[in-house]
Length: 355
Ligand code: SF4
Image 1 (cartoon, rainbow, N blue to C red):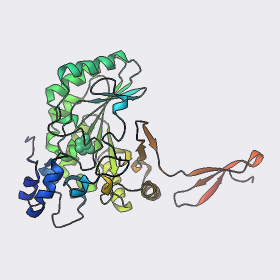
Image 2 (image 1 turned 90 degrees about the vertical axis):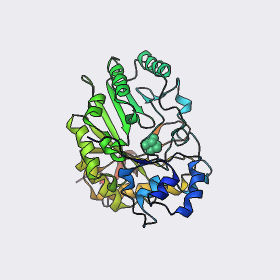
Image 3 (image 1 turned 60 degrees about the horizontal axis):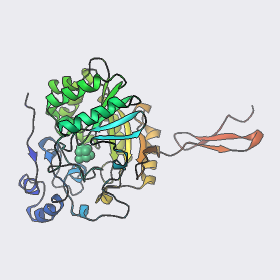
Image 4 (image 1 turned 30 degrees about the vertical axis):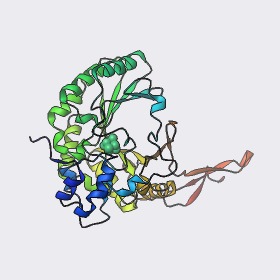
């Protein structure tokens, strides 16, 4: 099995591949000097260079507006640093930690909330000493029930390193679940080999994999096969999607994506409101847009296809669901009741008026 695709790593590569006109290279070079570029061939193939609004290009081809930073944007938009007791660990919620193994990804997304930390030039992986300190932290905190292995993209690490980390996590008695966050199954599906799948599967505890997918076109036949290799091995799959202007902010695209995920045995988990990462304003929608989108897919799609729309509150205050509410209190004292909206927006009293 061929396992690694060619990757375009510079604006010159993007021009040579015909994805960007050569006259635009200097302005893209200026962006690439600040924010990493990598586009594996399986994703490059999905781009229509003749479409100025191509939703795949919008996610991965640098854009000069990335150098225009807006008020409120921050290098650490979700406040990881405030909750990092040792390198590689973010301990924001009592029962779980983020375990950031690497700053490298197979593809660099233009909206990445960790864009100031990921990319070449950053440490490829935690040093052996930092890794041990991070594991010691998890061992010492018996309240940690779940470890979320993230990065960067942890699945770009060597199989030897992945096997060894998973083994050490499996040996920590109070850790009951390990969840891996990755974009590899869509970015470079052939790298999700049977050997990689074996390296992340633990014998006695569940490994969950959360796959980052933003557009139905990303779920190509090879990407679906990669997800099937994970699912067939018994690894439950979740999806994380970032709501992005001009990529997936219409009911038709979001519906197609959520259905395609479920057809691939991937349960839509979070729809993230795009974070306030520097230079990403052109890709953010309003929260109202997100709520209307969610309301529209609630009316037309199976419950299996419904993600939770969440905002990571800037400053490190964690995630909160921000989908529209379907219920409100009404009346008072003896006549107190609720008004509940159905999927088509009609309002109903609960409990119903006395019969
Ligand atoms: S794969 Fe994830 S961590 Fe890597 S650039 Fe994309 S959003 Fe950021």
